[in-house]
Length: 328
Image 1 (cartoon, rainbow, N blue to C red):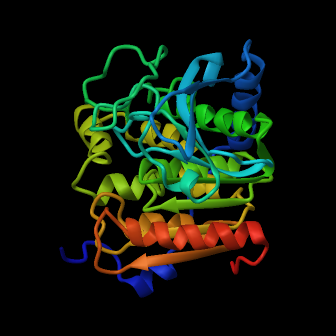
Image 2 (image 1 turned 180 degrees about the vertical axis):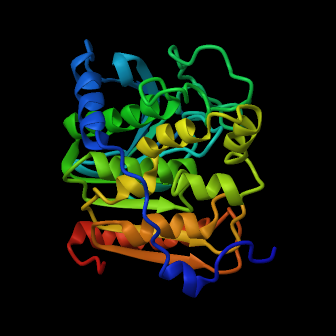
């Protein structure tokens, strides 16, 4: 796969100005205040039998945006006797939480692991269990990138980002989790959600976005020929008069802009031959990230990024982070 974007040297210096809505911070403050105030129930953690002897697994329901139930799995090492550090994970586009016995890496490493389901998604191999009651009928373009795009108030990712923040809230409130040792992570769409949460939630211990989606969205929509960014281009091909208003809505949800509000230490991964999340868009987020940061660059990889190699980097980084020796 050839390079399809800027060179690595150019990417390292790439930091274009992003439009900042005048009410950007107020919009998110109000969104999260409303989400928290409309939660009429506490998160529910119900232990389930998986046949695994070294990992305890809980079926999770968290009150998310508008108090709507968001599903997930919480996995914890069996026999843990003290509050644990926790990795909260967000999923890639189209993925759902899957089955109870899957995704054992972080629990096997001795951490609590809260995996958030993705509202309305889950049509890929890992099925989902969280509906999107406010989603309405699908638009003229399949997918989620243009759903409710007429206004920031109705846009799909307003609900999804609020869900993610509420899952971090739920992890912090769990009696077996140390609220000061919470790391957020995700790949692709999950990486974009990770950066959004990093910009919206103070006091995180760490942030690990991999090949993040939803960064410098205008550039992604203009230079990428692969989904999901093509959903935006297809929408604007049909609605020729809405370009300005569409990108005005999207500016509220640009993970690269939210990253400029983040303060927690971060470990990024970026792939230079990624034709789904172009490296220049990911570097926009990395270069603008406001907290301590480091990056692993996979020069000859596409959207698969570092995969298991990046997991090895993350395991070492989280261990050193919680030990107080991480170098970022």
